[in-house]
Structures are given as C-alpha cells and as structure tokens.
Image 1 (spheres, rainbow, N blue to C red):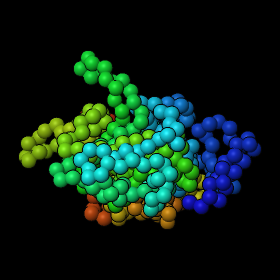
Image 2 (cartoon, rainbow, N blue to C red):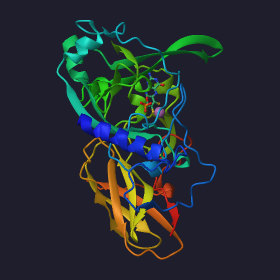
Image 3 (cartoon, rainbow, N blue to C red):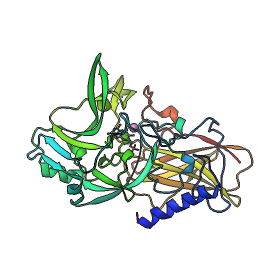
Image 4 (cartoon, rainbow, N blue to C red):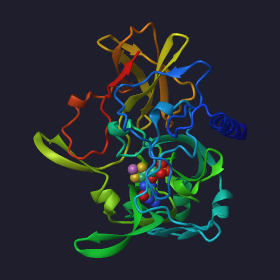
Length: 383
Ligand SMILES: Nc1nc2c(c(=O)[nH]1)N[C@H]1C(S)=C(S)[C@@H](COP(=O)(O)O)O[C@H]1N2
Ligand SMILES: [Mo]
C-alpha cells in the first residue's frame, strides 16, 4: 500500500471523529458517501458490542463497518491466548534449530536485509462465529521474508517430519495436575511449511508489525485459519516427531461426525486451511439505491461465483471487488433494486472453481466443537 493511503485514511477517520458525526465506538462508519446510510440489520441484538482493543484481550470488529479493502492495523481483530509479551526489537533474535544442516540466528536487521516479499493476506480466527457476526477477521498487506528460503538455507535433514513455530508468549498450563511452562506454538508438515506463499512478516500495512499483532515477526500462512500465524515468533524447530502441543492437539481441534471408509465415526482434526465461506456484513442505501456487501474467505482456491438470495427470490450473482487477490479476503456487493418496505431475509453463498458450494447449516456434518463456523449465514434487514 502506498504510504499516502494510510495517512489519508487516518485523517479521514480522525476527521469524522473530531467532527462529532459519530462518537460511539463501534458505530463509526468511516467511509459512507455523502447521504449514504447503513440499513439496520434486525438480527443484531441491542446488547451486541464490539470488544475494543485493550491490552491482553480479544478484539473483534463490527463487520458492518467493513468498507475498505485493507483493515486498519488498529481495527484488525486480536486473539492471543497467553497475553501480549513485551519484546525489545534490538535484543530479539529468531533461531532455526533441530534437524537442520546449519542452525541459524537472525536479528530483525538481518531479516530486513534478506530478499523481501509482500502479499495481501486476510484471515479469521478458527473460533470466529455468527454470534460475533464474524468480527474476528481482517485483511492486510504483509511484508517480510520467504519462510521457504530460510528453511532451505538451514537445510532440512532427511527424516524430518514437522516444523514447530514457537512464540515468545509463555504461560503456565496445568496438564494432568502438573503445572508446566509452555510457549504458544503451532507446527506445519514439511510440505505445508515449504509453500512459496508462507512468510515471516515484519510489516503490516506499511508499518512495523504492531506489538499486538506479534512484533517484531510473525508467521503468515496464507489460506489458513489465524491460529497458524504464530505471533512474537522466536524459534523455528525442525523435528522428526509430530508436535502435539495444546494448539495442535487439544485446542483448535474440530470434532465432526464423518464417514470413514464406510463407517460413521467422530473425527478430530486440527484446524488448518480456511473453509469456503461467505457472509453478508452490511447493507447500504444511497438515494434510494440499496447495496448488499459481504466477504469471502477460503484457502486460496479461485472462486467461480458469489451469489445472494433475497427472501425466496433466485440466487443473484454478486460483483467482486477488483482489489481481491488469491489470499486476501474477497469483498463482494450486489445492487438491490427497489426493495419493498418491511423486513427481508438475505443470505450469500460462494462457489469455487472446483464446484464446491458453501453449505447451508443443515448440510454441514454434525459438529460438536465450535471451531470453523462456515455455513451459509442468513441475515435480516428492515427497509
Ligand atoms: N504467539 C502467539 N501467536 C498467535 C496466537 C497466540 O496466542 N500466541 N494466537 C493465534 C490465533 S488463535 C489467532 S486467531 C491469530 C490472531 O492474530 P491477530 O491477533 O494478529 O489477528 O494469532 C495466532 N497467533
Ligand atoms: Mo484464533
């Protein structure tokens, strides 16, 4: 993103706040055109609140505010399970250890002197849900270095199976009655880790990676749920066993009833790539013209279509935002001509080029865990 864009957005936002047009946090609609208004959803309870950014706490967006392609760093959702560790960028090091030919150590400056890559990547927390109107979400431009290049330089030895990414955030966990100190960590198989898209990011939307988003360095695994994107990264370890830590083996594990070779079984899976999902986030009106807006997230498979259905009408093809890229969120909108006064039901569905269609909630496999909420999501608005 060019730096002018950032400053323009800041000024605009600040301007609106200063002018007192909207002062209630969570109800600021930054980029409504003159005369444009948000059509109220009738499914959002009065008690619904956006969790603002506070130290060591979860923050979600009001998705009715999604009007820009890139999420401001300050609005981008926040999830951290062990708090936000203080890190001194000068003292910080990244180490690559384990089954490698050369163990490596990098300062932030060393990494910045490597070949740089830049990518738009949007993601959501695997625990994002309809209850939060999918507010645990964001889309940004990330800059950093290629994970694959770093791993190639280290030289992965034969027999290695997994690569573990450790954060600097540590907490005491009670496991079977014993208290142990554990760092947040996630692992990837070698082929998953060696994807060209994976990056070690030190910049977010043109700014040094903010403290809350994992400064000075985080892993970004495009197409995967947020949990894969380890923040405050300080060690990459190559090993020949499966990493079974809490966020791989116990939390962020789905439990679904599935057919396994003809036998119905309850299957547990670690949360990995994002499921094909769309959701409607806002409806706007300008001079009697209505528009329905929403987003798509998936694993990066190209899309065939996004459609919106109003009440019992036909599925109508939505327009895709021209800024969409493979791993960004994909924004869409649909002109809604002459809606009749009263309450209306709206739902969206996305189809990818392989013909996979976003399922209705009843078509999804029976699921016990709340991870991966990706069924079609019906909204109601009043005209
Ligand atoms: N070190 C560390 N990295 C972490 C986490 C964490 O608790 N510690 N939480 C993960 C989860 S569950 C999510 S959804 C994303 C959230 O990233 P964000 O806060 O930058 O949006 O970070 C992931 N990376
Ligand atoms: Mo998450």
